[in-house]
Length: 607
Image (cartoon, rainbow, N blue to C red; front, side):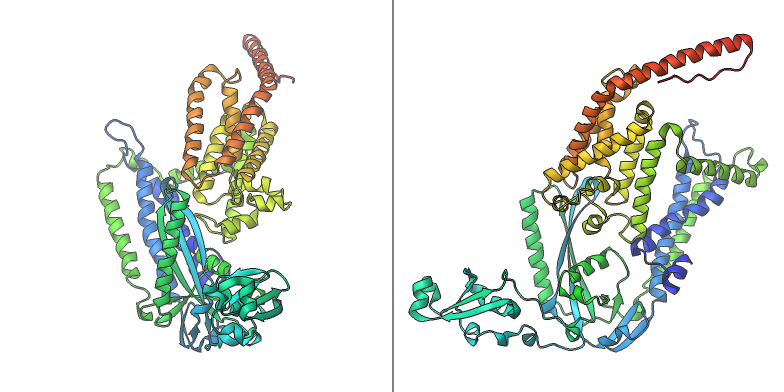
């Protein structure tokens, strides 16, 4: 209902389609399950024969999946079932009618000569094992076939330049004869300062046998560059047809091997594109806001089209009748819900009711659960004194991630261009004076799993480190080691977009490891965590060698953290001694109070 009201009927918000179609439908079922179903599941005798285990979470997870699956299918059905088809006499009418999901067009022309391809590369899979290569190919759609010869202004060049294969020399540099004619056609006439044609013995004397067909000497006003179409209002594409090619290879391959496989993939895509017909579709699907749309838009805006500030409409061709758009979604909605419900009921048969189940008041159970949930939520958002810094840093990182999600950057992962705009670490930008990136990037993350893993690691180290260091020092160390990690990353990587709190977190683990090797923590804690922390650090550094991970930032943060840990040891040792002295004084006061039956006096150690 929310999907239909907010995003289809009123079009009140613009959110990434992946959230609407996948993550929203998965997350929302948790609300009724935790409020209404959980108290009822607790009426079952869930203990196993050994009296151990917690099947409650398993039952809740199963119910969650059973409700989420048909809910996800339902969102896809809602989009296709409510989508209207607008019939257009020609493509120019697309902006003259109210915006709809689908279009049937009678007259249009797709110009394959003016495509704007864009390649993207992403790391995915378990342990970043996959290297995903994608080529986005937006093709401009016009109302008629434009005479491209007039667009390129060939008439401004000497006729001699268009006959035979003369040697082309631009600003003193010889152009390869295999594409010299195309190069001439592609030169911007506005940038040409002079053109001189040399023939016969004079040409041969200057450039040898390669100049037997003559030489064309061209001087430009600035750097020579191939022309782009002379864009004007009449030549502006009305819309763009979206083509997409994808292939996945192993991320563990050497860089040169990846490069060779990408070239082979690009050649295969080019061959398919050359023979592909772009006008045999049934209708066109207007692309919603998504990561794909952002990539198509970036490809289109890489040319002079972006200067016109015209709305970009990207259309996906559909090669089946409009009546078939819903497929079997409706049957799958009820089928999956029915199958899941039967399975859940069968599972319930294996667990009897608790003996006291009939005496339990469900309303009381629900109130108790609600009270516990409120206390948990309160503890989640209101920082505790002992871990104020850790909780504030975690909440700040999560808040920025949520803002990026609602800004439409994605959910599972964000692309490098968006991260760069939001303050990612990038050496060319830093050398250009954007030093603030050294700080901002440590609060940005590349996606959902990235932020969750980093916040878990921050939570773990903060439990032990912040109470010892104090909140102020803890936060300063986080920021300082994060900046050092960013500097190390920018120094090591020539042109890599880098984000994440992991450099700062490695800095905290460096401090933690340093303090575990000296007399700051108790012997039991040192024995428990010294080896495990070392294994954690080494494992993550080795794992970083697999690719897609900024090990330079990790090492920079770790080394700076180790150094700071040993530098702070004397002051931390004195603080611990004073705290222990305060504890002994408190014990004496407690004993006196016990003997005299008087209230205990709180004693605070002075620094």
